[in-house]
Image (cartoon, rainbow, N blue to C red):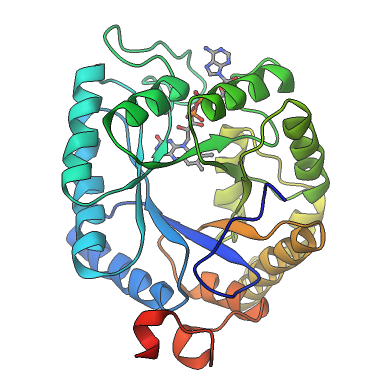
Length: 305
Ligand code: FAD
């Protein structure tokens, strides 16, 4: 199906890991340990998020540069158009390209005033993510991912308008969409049907958020328009003072969600790691996915030699 991407290995499942760029030296060390621990699982690619405006470029650039220089992970850089002229964005794209980046996650970004405020594009900037996809296409032969919102973006009046934006991004050359996290697979399936009905054929890869902390997640989800259903909440009931119990519940939940999506025909997944490897590995473990050195016959070329 349109959602099954060709893979360089013989696994039935493909996955990518999202990180955010560490800003402090202490965070850098623990981020790198997570990268190393997770790289043993041969993700299709890893991605690094990007903030708003010129100041956000430095940490993302440093992180993707290190990934390109010191690992053989396929690395994608997120990119936003907030608070920047189109010329500035083009310069960033060329700089990242010159550092070896061939993949981008092209985003508009959140309103400069913060989530919940009205978005106004920079007067000399790209107006939205669809315009950024076109700009990337003009500059290089990049692999381009874009966002998708199974529960619609908070700024969208309705799903139809929301899917129209995804269509514009696909029409301009996006290779795949990565979704905002969600927990209700019925909602996702319904959304995917509407996406296909709208004539959008690119893969739509479910974004999976293993829950590091249910309270923080609920605050965050409310801001980005993602629903935390009661069945998720109830899995953490009575576990307020039980960190190992929370960890087990979170790993079980994410693995169950992926298995159910696999039963529905999905085969590629984008994991929000929050720069933490332990919970992510527990999820992979429950899915029967082992690190390469223990996966006999399924190791990538570089480890077979
Ligand atoms: P678009 O695709 O341009 O628009 C998103 C939706 O908003 C559309 O469906 C559209 O219908 C609606 N919309 C947009 N403008 C309007 C308008 N004026 N009126 C009505 N509806 C409107 N943010 C970061 O800052 N850095 C990151 O690295 C980052 N990574 C992300 C990765 C993924 C996989 C996802 C899903 C999101 C990420 N975000 C990131 C968040 C994203 O920047 C915000 O959700 C932002 O508000 C929208 O950006 P977009 O590219 O999704 O926008």
